[in-house]
Amino acid sequence: MKKVPLIVIIIVTLLLVMTIVLYYLSQVSIVSLDWFIDVLEGMGYIGAFVAGFLGSSSILIAIFPSYIVVALFGSFQHNILGVLTIGILAGLGAGIGQYVHYYLGVGGRYVLSEERRKSLDVWRVRLEKYGLWLILAFAMTPLTPDDIIWIPLGLIEYPKMKALLAAITGKIILNIFYASAGFYGWPLIEDFLKSIFP
Image (cartoon, rainbow, N blue to C red; front, side, top):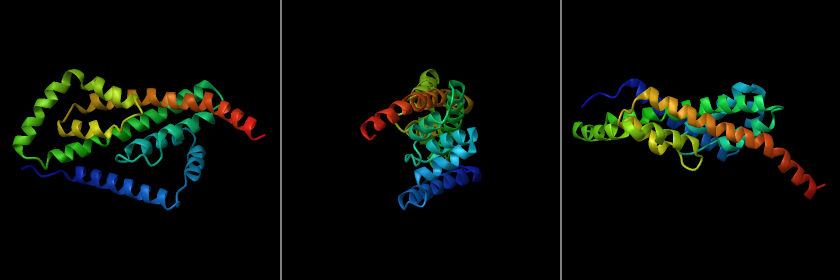
């Protein structure tokens, strides 16, 4: 049995610790969403990248959901170019954040027996044809946590660059949608609330 590379152990440990700490802080109200949004807004466009990364790099639990944070970033913009920039940067961060989960699968591969690894190799061959479209579909849809495909992709050692590019493309499309929803939708929501509570 192969030894697990130290870098895989470090990445997996950091991801787990980051997820647990952020979840705990949000539960005990040490970190509030308002405070977090203020900090990100102060960071400008880099904040959009960080929001995308944090929104998708935590394991199964979205501590700072992108559909809220990126939409708020979109509502702060003054033109469509700003909205597109927010969507692209948040999507880039989200794609990289999701890609980190690939290494959880790679680490998991090292704890499997040789026989199990060989049976997983069959899946890599099967996914060669449609894997790219599967990653893109999951990255573009907000309905499911992408972790459910990323960890298995790491287990079967699906081609890294192909997976990363598909993830980034899908997340950019999704985050442009979120930013646009904030840009166009927030004024409507604000007007509606003002009409109810003058």
